[in-house]
Image 1 (cartoon, rainbow, N blue to C red):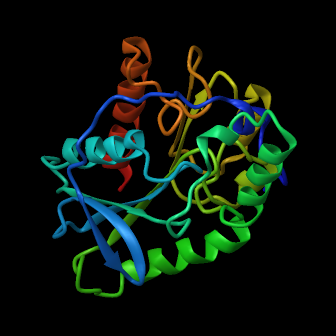
Image 2 (tube, one colour):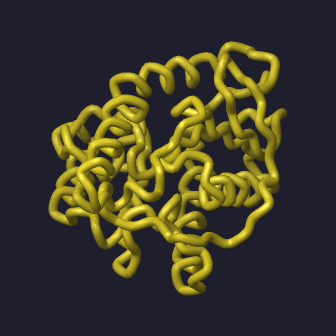
Amino acid sequence: MASTHSKACCETPVPANVADYQAQGEYLVILGEKVYVTGDKTATRAIVWVFDIFGYSLQTLRGADIVAASLSSSSKGPVAVLVPDWFDGTVANKAWVPPVTDEQTAKLGNFIKTKAAPELVVPRVLKFAEGLKQQQPTLPNIRSLGIFGFCWGVAVQTSPSRADPEEAANISVPMALLLSKDEDLPTMRKFYDNLPTSDKFMERFEGQIHGWMSGRGDLLDPSIKAEVERGYNLAIEFFDKYL
């Protein structure tokens, strides 16, 4: 995996105000993790969500609810969407992004190197995913898992903000890449081409900034909101096909 985040990942600003939203799910403790759960807890399919550095933003909760609701009537059965609190109650301060002072730069860098360090979070993701299949009581029927990563993401859901084309050869599951205008297109094309599976999809959203589907998405702007919806619709179609 690439050792540094993209410039857009650290410098794209966060909207000062966000559209109001009432989350539809609930917070539960599953396998020792605080988890936002939305969808059907009796489902055999689950999607593990890896949010961006802004954690449980309204944009993130709304996205999880959209995916769960859209797949609730699937002919393949509903899904449970699970958003664990990978940062244990902490998030990156919006005021740090983009950093304008040395102090903000240091705080953002420290957060990424500690709370959001892949070498710390990836083992938790893997442990959580494996545990979901072990007849745990909250979601006892899970048989198949997908993962949905945003910006920071993790190595088990390779993020375009850190993508290394050479890493793609190690990925053996179906994979979709939804890119903003800020991702490096030659790098991402090479990454996509290196994926050994034929079950793959990539689309670039030319007018959208890095993080438009998560904590940086300005849902008060109708044009951005429409592209957020389009992105989720593509993801929903992909998950329903392969999960």
